[in-house]
Image (cartoon, rainbow, N blue to C red; front, side, top):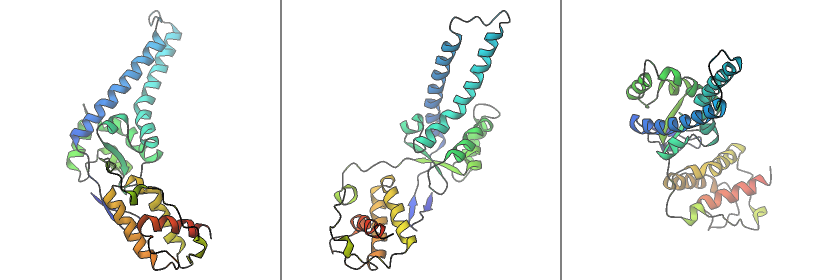
Length: 244
């Protein structure tokens, strides 16, 4: 799947299929089952559920309520706080993102996971599996409603590249850089890239940095010739930011 970033660069995302998603779900369901077993032992250990004991009835009600929270809240919590990855998805190299390529938020994650109940119909996740197979972006019903997709997580480059990963020492004479021609929208695009660059694979990351730098360098006077790519963008953000 190809999406266009706010900076105007196309990025390729590899969609996850039924097999890898099923394997991820198995891991997550085993973890949830372990949590529910532990909860049952905590609530019902040494408690008799017979004889019309009202206290036992309350415990049963609490158990079912917490079970529902675990069933729904487990995925929401991990997807929102862990960049779209539950433990099962992380183990299988998957990630949930919005169809625009942006991270999921609470609303989108809540929609896709509450509607998981429908994906289970009529049995054994049949509706969800069929939806994944027949939709162009491998989306189950909850994904369609929430506007999300499940993709292969990008793996960080194994070989460090100084130009893309090191912290750049900014020039001491930033005050000499004339950044008056840089617009607020262009500065926002630079900052957006710098904030998201660690989420990109090395090739697209360097290509995007070069594209932004080549388009903006001619609008800034006083830039030393050795500054290009990310080095230039970091210095430009600091120089322009000091004047806004």
